[in-house]
Amino acid sequence: MAKAGVQGSTRDREITGARVIVTCPGRNFVTLKIETKGGVTGLGDATLNGRELAVAAYLTEHVIPNLIGRDAGRIEDIWQFLYRGAYWRRGPVTMSAIAAVDVALWDILGKMAGMPLYQLLGGRSRDGALVYCHANGDSIEQASEAVGRYIEQGYLAVRAQSGVPGLAKTYGVTKSKLAYEPAESELPTETVWSTPKYLRHTPKLFERARADHGEEVLLLHDVHHRLTPIEAARLAKDLEPYRLFWFEDSTPAENQDAFKLIRQHSTTPLAVGEVFNSIWDCKGLIENQLIDYIRTTIVHGGGITHVRRIADFAALYGVRTGFHGATDLSPVTMGAALHFDTWVPNFGIQEYMHHTQETLDVFPHDYAFREGRLHVGDTPGHGVGIDETLAAKFPYAPKQLPIARLEDGAMWDW
Ligand code: CS2
Ligand code: MG
Image 1 (cartoon, rainbow, N blue to C red):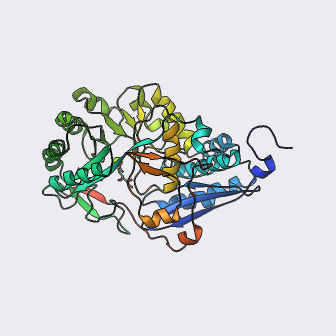
Image 2 (spheres, helix red, strand yellow; image 1 turned 135 degrees about the vertical axis):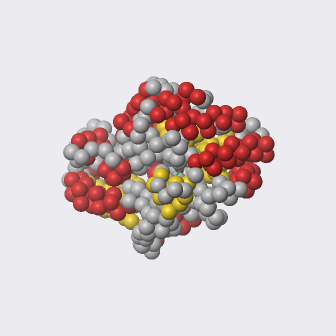
Image 3 (cartoon, helix red, strand yellow; image 1 turned 90 degrees about the horizontal axis):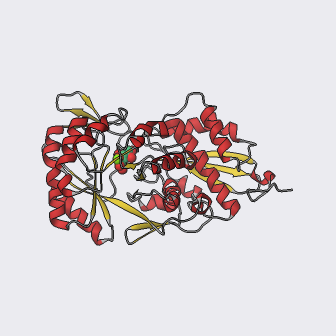
């Protein structure tokens, strides 16, 4: 006799198997597939750029043996078991592994209930999720031209990054026609960073972008953890005339109080959190109104179950979501994040770098871009699948993220 609640009998919901699929269609992805006795399966993303096999091993060795026989409908209890039961709490590897299980279970729940994930969360708050894409160029002129191309494609929000004169390589600038993929070699490539050169140059990028494209387009910029708090305050103030939608990762955020200094000097909106993995990383930033957007997303923030707590806490303080959505997060995360974006009342914006076609072929999905927004479909669950036969054709390729050193050779933040 099926118990009231989740459709499908308790027997059908019993987890009978789970496995990790590592594939590299242009870049590495780690996917968890959970199987149930009733035949319904669910997918979760476990990709952690440059540390993929750490999460794959955590899942295979320490998580999957604990899942077999459990009720896939007990999503919260399994989350609590994996979090509290780990003893060694938090951290990107643990929380990415927990996230993969959590998203796969929400996917199964949706399929069993015959509902898209946004409906399980509480229904639509919006038709489509405003997205921003990545424009970049070696020079300010090239970067501004790239902004223009995206505006012509219907984007309402564009992140702009440009090369910095005197620096051979700059974060976010790609020479290829594909999206910027920083994890390019088996061991980290070394890049050289100069804050003075960057601080002198960046206001000119946005002066040019506003001159070329006007005031309406939403412009974003990612500092990528490179500045000290007072340097971040200075650049945020210098950028005020160009009215950015957000100024991201302006200073390393382990020291949440550092953002008080930035806030004292500027009204440029601040975004942070793609490297966070729990509410404790951002609690102070949110409750002290030190940021405007929280970027911690589904795959690295412990899944839907935990990120929902972060979003609800942020809502109390007028802080909005701005999920990380780089190409090193798989379409499974994009799908789950978009359902979350469709529901969450304090939505801000969704990052949308473009996966390669071979990636999209491995991960069939039902979300689609229209008029500056991404729209999820009504497929039960998160709407993203995996073609395992195709995935098997792309073996894992060890890759790590770059590092940065200052011009005097000292290690810095990449
Ligand atoms: C970046 C990311 O998209 C962003 O905001 O910070 O591209 C980041 O560099 C990568 O996700 C690192 O793997
Ligand atoms: Mg970023």
